[in-house]
Image (cartoon, rainbow, N blue to C red; front, side, top):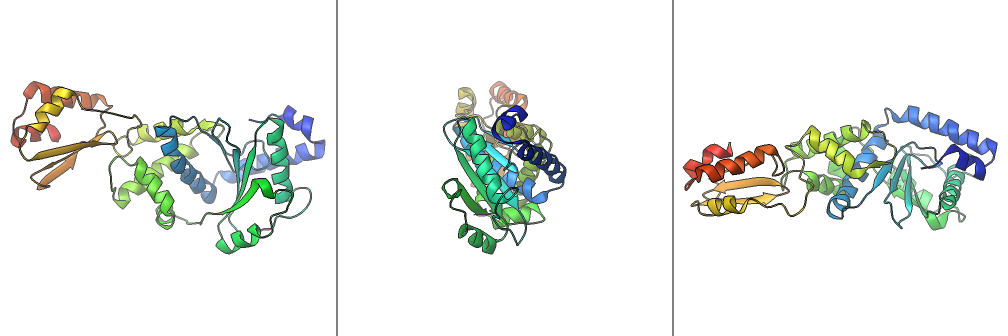
Amino acid sequence: MYTLEQLKNIFDNEVVKYLVNKNIGGKSGAKGNTYENFFAVYQLALLAQIAIEGNREIQLSSQLLAFVDDFIVDCQDETPLQHYQLKNSQNETWGKGFKSISDDFKKQYELNKSISRESQINLVVSSPNLKTKLESTIPSAIKKYSQVTHFPYAAELIKLIARVPKFQQAIEYLCAFDNPAPDKIECVATVLLGAWVSSAKSQVSVMDILKKAQESTPSFIRSFSQNLQLDSEVTEILGKIPDFKYNLTKGFLHWEFKNKLEEGDLSYSIETKRFRQFQELIKKNNPTCFQELEVFLI
């Protein structure tokens, strides 16, 4: 996104040296940074629906050669570059002068202007009281493009999800089935975390991370394709079976018999070879009652 040559053309040697050292230190510290990784998964989950349904190319980065580099969102269009600096502490100030948070924000804005991009620069803190304090003291020089955001800290991902309703809703959207149980939510979130942590973290596509997670755990993560439908012949056969109902949600088939006396889900999505084989078996055997169909639902 930014090159060393670009930086040298804009800033003096002292600033460039500071930024290079900051980047090296940031990469080293990020390896075990739970707070930053959980925030990345949160943002990834929030952006997933836009990427899937809007067919948007959204790129995520962390620890680039930039002044505000903990997390960067680039929607590849006219929207501003979104930068996030994360602080999991109780005492932070904007500061003044070289190497301060406010100066980093100012220089990031200048750097983005040099590549003809607007900026939305965020200071993310884990303390709600600190958020209030920092909001009231944003320096006027950076106020038009800066904001303070609260994101809580938790040592465990599932506990964090429970504390942040938007996080849970976003993970539920990615789950293969509606109204997923807590263990399913935790599984999907954990797989997303693994996909993010193992990625290059440099202008990586949201869809690439989602697909990587899906490949890892295909039975738990929804299909990313839109308007998926059963084979018309299969639809006709299933529709004639007494007391049998089904729906195709997020690419997975959920079924029930006699008002949920029995119910279940196929563990593979409509996009898989196994689902195609399932449909061929239904057409070949043409079951006319649940007892004949049941063997294919296992």
